[in-house]
Amino acid sequence: MEPLPRMSPTLSLCVYCGSRPGTDPAYRHAAEAVGTLIGRSGWQLVYGGGRAGLMGLVADAALAAGARVVGVIPSTLMERELGHGGLHELHVVETMHERKQMMAERSDAFVALPGGIGTFEELFEVWTWRQLGYHDKPVGLLNVRGYYDPLLDFLRQTEQAGFVNSAQRELLQVDTDPTALLERLGTLARQASAPDDYRRI
Image (cartoon, rainbow, N blue to C red; front, side, top):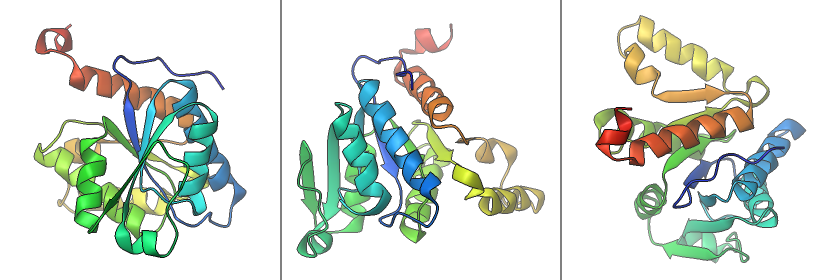
């Protein structure tokens, strides 16, 4: 697994994923691959601060590969002892709104891995913010073993039905390969953070 291009300052990637491991080992392998890529590329991981499921796997893989890892977790989950104790930063907040806002503020790009309703909600919110112009950070979806195929079919249906246009749908970067997707997100994040003169080159 080759590292991705390094960015200066370090790119901070927010990862949304399940607090459960899922039934297919491919989901776990993908989470570990993403974490490893983040570390080997000199990037920083921002995530939900948990130690369970895919969340814990991506964090552990990132840490093992040398990444700085920032977690943001609501106090209710800390009380259930679900917080990851080995992170560089673990911020305990009172509400989910605070959690999502801090994660967004600390990130240069976003990617969703397989997960449940929390992952869906986080993905759609940050994608909505992107299309409304609240930020210009890239948003990605890693479609592991076809997990998101039904969702992608439904998104095409929303476009055909006239509720979503192609420009909005194309703001979501989709790939089945972790390396290709993270490389694309890194390039887009670098372009978004560059001065206007650089963007026109």
